[in-house]
Length: 439
Image 1 (tube, rainbow, N blue to C red):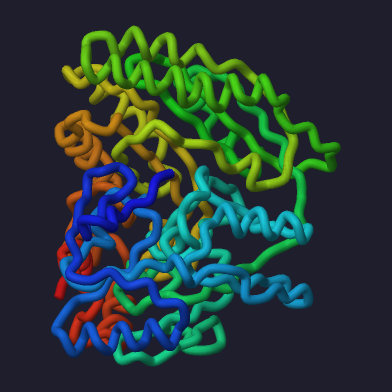
Image 2: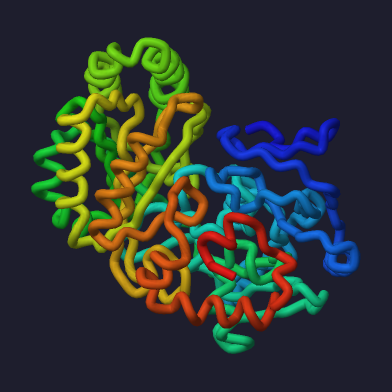
């Protein structure tokens, strides 16, 4: 992944390249005290402040024309508590470094998303998740948070300390303060056996509840313009470890999933009429395989083909109906969709603005290759998902506003009340937050 900040021009771009910002200042504080001073000076100068991670959000959640705070120097593990089974890590630490460090200590997070390039604060602040029958998002694994609020106060919160802030700040959207450290629950490292297998759309949707129930982590990809899916089932294993072979793993994860897929997407963008044929080939390219490894090596995969994305969480019981409606929409439309549709699940959690707050959820994510016009496809998908009371992922493209979201989240008012108390002058505001939270 490339750095998302062009230092010579003071221009910041996100990973997908669909969001650009030109901040007045860029700051990289090396300590909590330096950060508090940055906030004080910004406030005196009448500038808004936004922290930014690695830019993997597709929305303008981190964009600002004020002060952009980069967490490059706020990295590393503060400490591991083996009695409490927690790790406290600086907010700017990339998930890939955290995962590797925990593995060296014989430890692991319980669940994670499918990439690990993001910083821990960026991933948790936008609700990054994987898939799980019993284990929820990365934010749901947080046991304590440290953040610097608008007035420079260093606030620690947990279920026992400032619990109202804790309920909101685990997915805080950068609206409550700048997160400086996160404490996660951890456990002894374990093995996961992954079973990847092609399956038809009709079979996956008919057996969806059974597949979710029988596997600790189930997800699948449907290839538009085909009746084909690729499924992945991960469950804990007694071992022994049996990772993919070096050559076969490279063929599946790099050559097919990235290299050849990149070529197919480029051809499809240039010649949209070729996409259905390419989709039929792509959907049959990956073969069944089984492997066993430590968690982060099973949960995550390299993602080198750049894209834009929309993702909605719907009640789990509505997932199959929503998917079938999406498939019917694609089939009757002139749209040509080169990227598979990703489906994952999560149990209910207790975080105010979590997309799984208070309800078991299924996530339906749609993508298009970077540079492809996406508005028509995403608008049609959004119309379907909002018909099922869908909640948009905070870091992915959507058009919802506070009027819609306040009705979809029972604890929306609880979050905005905490925001009013911690940032009454809206030091951390930007256009995205004005739209989704109101003012």
